[in-house]
Length: 267
Image 1 (cartoon, rainbow, N blue to C red):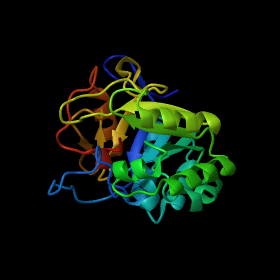
Image 2 (image 1 turned 45 degrees about the vertical axis):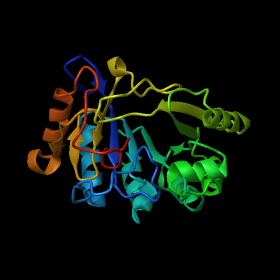
Image 3 (image 1 turned 90 degrees about the vertical axis):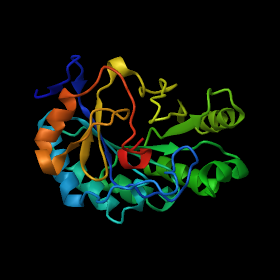
């Protein structure tokens, strides 16, 4: 089987694609600062399909659609349908904040999406609104229920914490997940510019020695690591050239990233 191996011998098979930098929430740990520079351009549906076809030929087997908020793209169901038909892709999944999921879960599942991760940092309505800049947690909970009903399982909950899963909001999210048969992972708040990150509790993220992923920004740059300033433009290098360059440049562990934010890279 064709596969790309990075300088440390890690087999790279997981591609995370930010399909938009737009978001309908302003989580205080994620939203760009007022006046921050924003890169222009968003990959088209056709470009994303071409990217995944090339990636599959190079041995990528898992694709995750991220953002921003991927469900804000008007063509997201069509993107899912396109990618679900790419030979060699064994798992197609998505990370979403869940605000729009209730009305889209069934269509996404029918289009070929396998499962979703839903961001949920609090189940108390007031706390959720405070964290997300006015978001409605009831919409998220309805979205999670719709995802389960549509078969987008196992539904996994991503909960950002300040330091640990013992914090009140995190404990409440954990209890909610347990009561509804959901998997939960606790993600300690990261700082890309300062290079601060930790292993994800309950997930594989942040485990640098075993990392098998690279990322594509919403404007079409392939990044070897979330915590890296390097990015290889698919228009300048060609899709295969950019993918190969990113894998060859994959660092032993995360460093810092001052050139991008979570929304463009897909956190």
